[in-house]
Image (tube, rainbow, N blue to C red):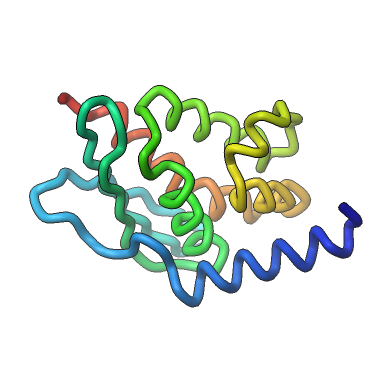
Length: 146
């Protein structure tokens, strides 16, 4: 894919998810993990419900820049329905991708739209914005007792 097309796809994904975020809201009676990015002012809360070792429901709420909101929305799409182990692997792959590390094509495919956010590696100050929700999800998954 040409750089111009990738840039257009990045803009489209970011704008669509920021304007109409998927899985935005709160889950009753599900513990919440909140992280913030003081540099940008982002605050993201993630709630994950796991049933039979799979993410049965996931939501995020909070406020912040377009990148943090779009990344959180894309993340909920990617992680929904995944096993806890697979979700943790996807979070690791995304974290590597956005700091400019190479990830196997298998992970890029599974990340879907989230993979286009890998271009934030070119803007180091935006990496924290893109990874904030993913770190909150990793923390939430680490605290789940089924």
